[in-house]
Length: 187
Image 1 (cartoon, rainbow, N blue to C red):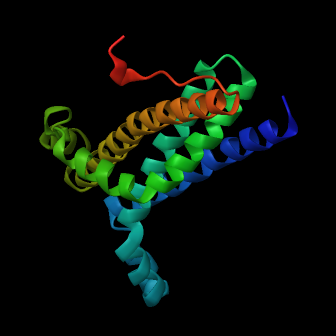
Image 2: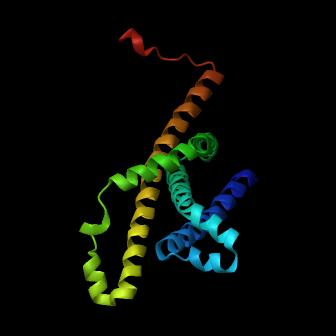
Image 3: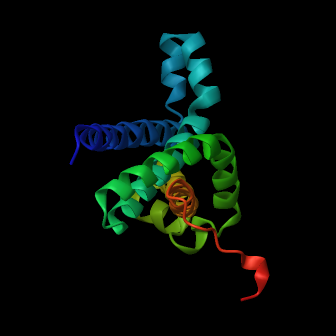
C-alpha cells in the first residue's frame, strides 16, 4: 500500500475515536444537563456549550456514519488503486454534503419511531429509582437518537460512495478514450 493510503488510513483510524469522544461527550452532556456545571465555572463558555452541544452531537453522529461508510465501502472494492481513487471522490462528495446531511439525518432520526416501544421510561425508573432512572432514561433516548442519526448517515454515505464509484469509472473510461454507451438508443 502506498504511503498516501497509509496516511488516509491513519487519519480515518484517529478521526473515528475523536468523533466518538466528541459525540458521546456532547450526548452525555445534553442528556444529563451537565452544561449547567460548566456555567457555574465559566458562564460564557457554559452558555456557548449549552447552545451548541446538541449540534455537536448531531454533527459527530453524522460524521461517524460517513466515516463508517467509507471504511465499509472501501473494503468492498478489490483493487487498492480503484479503492483509493473512489475514496478520494467519496470524501469530496461527503465533504460537500456534510452540512445538509447533518440536518437531514437529524430530522429523519426524529421522524423514526422513538424509544418508547424499546425501553419503557417507567420500567427504567422502577428498576433504578426515580432520580437515577430519569437520567438513565434521558441518556437512553439520546443514545438511540445518536445511533439513528449515525445509521442514517451511514446509508447516505454508502450511496455517496456508490456515486463516487460511478464517477471514478466514468472518468477512467473517458480518459482511456473508451466510447460512452448511449442509453437513449434503445439497443
